[in-house]
Amino acid sequence: MKLTFHGAAREVTGSAHIVTINDKNILLDCGLFQGKRKEAFEKNRNFLVDPAKIDCILLSHAHMDHSGNIPTLVKKGYKGKIFCTEATADLCKIMFRDCARIQIFDVEYVNRKRTRQGRKPFEPLYTNEDADIASEHLEPVAYSKPFTLFDNVEVCFHDAGHILGSAFTEIIFRENGSTKKLMFTGDIGRRDIPILKDPVVIKDIDYLITESTYGDRKHPPAEDVKTTLKELINEICSTKGKLIIPAFSIGRTQHIIYLLNKLYSEGQICPLPVFVDSPLSSAATEIYAKHKECWDSAATEFIINGKKPFDFRGLRYTESAEESKALNDTAGPMIIISASGMCEAGRILHHLKNNIGNPKNIVLIVGYMAENTLGRRIAEHRSEVQIFGTLLPLRAKVEEIAALSAHADEFEMLDYFKRCGASHIEHVFCVHGEQNALEFFAERLAEAGMKNAHIPAPGQVFEL
Image (cartoon, rainbow, N blue to C red; front, side):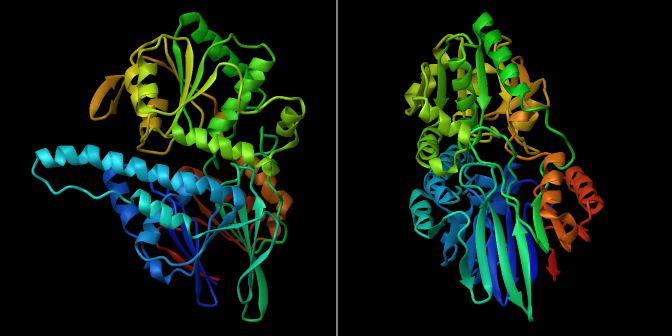
């Protein structure tokens, strides 16, 4: 077996790794790189391998940093299937199209400037048509149902508890007379998190590729989330301000809606309008409601008690751009949940532009913000941030609820791998993390009993 690391190697976004078994090239994820615009432009358009030479894709989940560059791969010659869970397939169909829309919008905006400067216009990364063609390659597979990928290669997806449809990828293969097991985590979810089931424990792992996003830190206790959210909502009810929440359309948005529903149902917060301002979030929430097989018992109990987890009084889903713009002229108090989660594109940019200058407002950070993103700069409490090319003062209050993260932290990941049987693992490869997190987590995994802990560089190849 050979492992070649392409994306999310010594960085957080752009997940993409190739496993070569018996001369077959299996691509694990194909995500968009997010960060500095020029660097992202180059990385997302140029693959380290000819797409036509990839035999199949095993997709861990639908987040754009794991799936978002699949339409580009297909556009450049990939012909094979994209194996994923049933919920991931449904989510990808809407995610690909939404990403294409954002690509087209961003390029149009940049090209207006380039045209005035007499420079050659850019082409979008991919179009709606490219997105639809990529969706035709999706091959949904149920959880915990092993399937034969090639001769001597069997795959099984197990619930990762990260977002709806997220999966640990288990590859069992026979090569040179011996049978081995490779596990790719994608992103590792957390135990006892609302809506989703806990991550499934996989035993007898020989080789491991693991994310390391929060490999050097610990999340606050989950029970603090509702209390903090309640305090922030009561604060904007008092100041008549706006609570602006940048949230990924898939996962974080539904988690927040669920918690707000609980707070409303329990009478813990004042009545105020809540706007989910993202067509993608609305569509994704419908898919969350459809796939009840992925829900935990607490979410199912909502239905039994005659309630809907993703709908309550005061909650509104905006669709049109006109509805979105109108929120900027509407007085608070109100809550606006909008995408993208790292504040790099989408309607959240307009809400931030129009609201971060007002000290009555609060920007609530609820997830990981990668380096060189607007979200990271806001989370760092910069005095000024640039939005649409204009420097704006950041006077709004900035708060963070790290316990809302859908990623397991250092201790949760270590506990998970100990339950898997860490000492059985011959080689572990730490990806999807910033350098400090990677180095720290690799050391912790070695201390836990894993025999060889690696931090692969982009393009690095390992023969096992």
